[in-house]
Length: 106
Image (cartoon, rainbow, N blue to C red; front, side, top):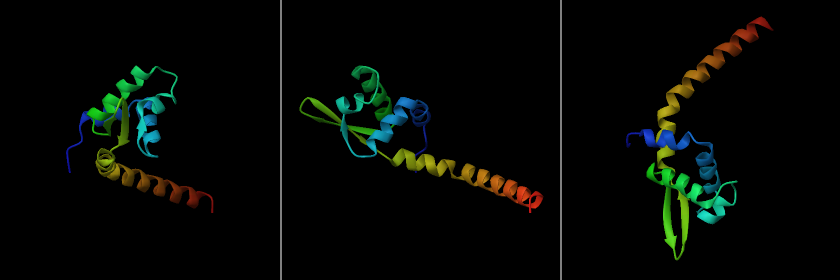
């Protein structure tokens, strides 16, 4: 497994970039199609896509004059693997809280 980089976390920290990834779940899209979902100009969306590409979260393919972007999920799988112990930690804490509440309210 590749080591997670700060680039992946930085890319995911921005809500526009998270929304771009969500849009790409349905399959590849052109930059113009992606930009139509935002109240910003296409160059700004392209800059967000560049950050996602540098983090390995999207790939780009040129087809004539159009650029098509595709979700690359591998860094997200690595992120999920990294977060898993924390998920288990919180699940255990919530189970303990539920048990306490169940004891107080039979």
